[in-house]
Length: 388
Image (cartoon, rainbow, N blue to C red; front, side, top):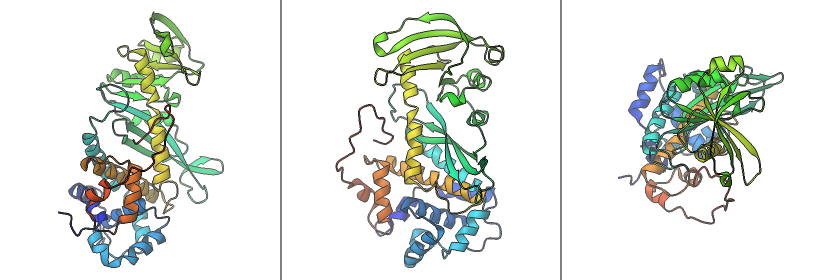
C-alpha cells in the first residue's frame, strides 16, 4: 500500500488531517494566505524536529535540495526562510496546541493498558515543571531574573506510555504551584508531584473532586498525629500515620485528615516523608508511586536532548510556543506510530532511523521493524528507564 511513498509521507499518514483543518479554521490561520499553508508550515517544522535542523536557513536549504520530492512530502509551496519565519511569527500558536491535544487523545487510547511499574488500574499522572533558559535581550517577553530570561514548561505526564496530557508554556516568573489552578481534577486519578506544588488550599480542590495526590512533606510541616498504622519495617517503612494540620491557615484550607508516611530508602539511606489523601493503598505502594514520578524528569531530559526546544528558530512569543507545540506533536506522533506498528524499538532508535531515511521509499513498517537490537546500554538496576 505504501510502495513508492517517501518515509516522511508514510509517517504523516498517521496524522488526523481533518482535525488539523478544523484547528486552522477555528483560529483563522489561513486568512489572506495565498501560498504556504498552515499544513506546509507544520510539515516543515516537523521535518526540522525529526531531522535535527538547527536553523530556518538549515531547513530551507535541506528542503530546496530535494525540491522534486516536496510534492510527495505533502508540501505544496516553495520553502523560503523568510516565509517560514513570517509564518512562525504571525500564525496563531493555538492551532498547533489544539492539534497536539488531539494527537495526545489518540495516543492515550493506544497506551491505556500500558504498564508503568505499579499494579494499579487507576490513571496516574506525574506533574512537574522544567525551565528553558533564554537571553533576556533577545526574548524580553519572557522575564525570569534581573538579567536572565526563560520559559517554563509545566507538564502533566500520563505514566501509561509517558504521554504529556497537559502542557502549559509560561514565562520564567510564574511559580509552578500556580499551574494547579489550571488543572481539572480527574476523579479517581492519582497526581504525583514534588514539594514545589505543596499548597493545601489548591490540593483540597483535588480532594473534593475525588482525586488523590502524593507529594513530599516540607521540613517545617506542623501536624498532629491521630492514629498510627502497622508497617513492615523490612521494606524501609518507618511509620504510616493519620494526621491533621495544626497551623491555623493550613487547617482552614485543608480540614480533612491526611496520611503521612515516613520511608527510609535502603539504597541511599535517605529518609523521605510523603503526604497523601489516599488511605486505601498499602504504604509501600504509595512510596513506589512517588518513585515513578522520576519518569517526568526523564521525559524532560529526553525531549531536550532529542527535540529542538532549547534553541529556537524565532524570537517572538508566538514562534517559540508554535515550535514547542509542534515538537510535542512530533513526539506524540512517533509514539502513535510505534504503537500502531507494534514496534519493539525505543523512541530514540526510531527517531535516529527516521532522521536518515526521510527521503527513502522503504515501507515504514519494514524499515522500523529491521532496527538491530545492538548492544543496549546496561543501566544500573536502580535506574528507571523512560523508554524500554
